[in-house]
Image (tube, rainbow, N blue to C red):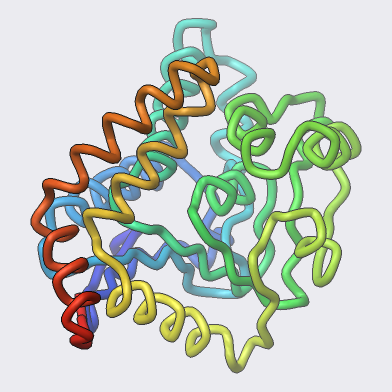
Amino acid sequence: MDLVLYEVKERVGYITLNRPDKRNALSYEMVTALKEKFDFAEKDTMSKVIVLRANGESFCAGADLASLQKLQSNSFEDNLADSNYLKELFLKIYQFPKVVIAQIQGHALAGGCGLASVCDFAFAVPEAKLGYTEVKIGFIPAMVLVFLIRKIGEQRAKHLLLSGELVQGIDAFNLGLVNSMVSKNELEGKVNEFAHRLIHNNSAHSMAMTKQMIDRVQWMSLEDALNYAVRANAEMRASDDCKKGIASFLNKEKLTW
């Protein structure tokens, strides 16, 4: 059985965690399969927006038991390599040129919550519990916190990372972990509706460049960020998508991307 599935429907690429018997826990093989599917989706011209979802009751329970047990006997070099491997997956999703939407139908815990956090958007059911429980087992949410602070700010990130508390429903929404709370029977439809709005209303090139800029400017000084923005602005004006979009606007023509 494939650990991760990939399919395309109406320009939406679906990457599906498919280890429901283990609550879609992150093993080395699962991380490998996810990286492979995202590599494929990046090159796939049939998909414009990606939905990351899961089969079973849980979205992702974090590291699986076998991986946690292996930590006890790993050398430092082994743990360094394994940590870097997970980092590569998180960074790949965070910097992915296509918009990635997390469809959270069940609990997303520890690294599983990190997986959802590096997506651009997240839709979750009210019953889903989300959180970073690493401190409860003497571990740290190392890679996750780098992205989470960017996503929701230091104060909210500290609350989640240092308490190890699980949140759900309106609390997950208010903390910025999810963009929308949707009932279980409406989740798939609402995610598809949102994905298709992005597909039909927005330029893929514009969304990719905007994602790239959001990532890069946060490391720059104000002046460097503005200079980078000026150059990016000028370059985009010469792009085919921008010319097409402006012409459509001026001619009052309906444009479908």
